[in-house]
Length: 190
Image (cartoon, rainbow, N blue to C red; front, side):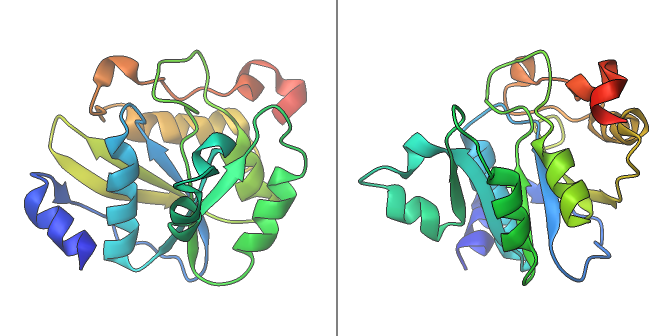
């Protein structure tokens, strides 16, 4: 009901390709340029019947809102000590129909590279990656295509780059173009 109300009043249209997914998937949330992106991703997932799980910096999970963040599917990440994060997330994704929402830009500000956690999690868990978006140019948001990673990091990221090439975040100047460190250092990712 909350998602329906959001789409009726937001001024944005929900546009999603049919997803050939029976279980869980890793969902890339991009461009990530505003706090509103979080609201959009919840509304997209709820409206399409997926339970979102998402990674957030551990400080978001302190009182007084920590319980709410966890209830909304949040998984705290301590960036200074990520430890077994990938293994823990992969085990959570093994059951049910979940979308693990990851913003590979890592922040709402412009960076040089995307973080590669989504790639490692999807590969380790053998999950498809769904390309989700918020596009302020067309006032649309939703799911794009689902892709299966091949292990060829550059080729996989070429598909991701092609999809996001015409997407504009709420604050387009803050978008980090899709590029992983592993693409420029083949010994790390191929």
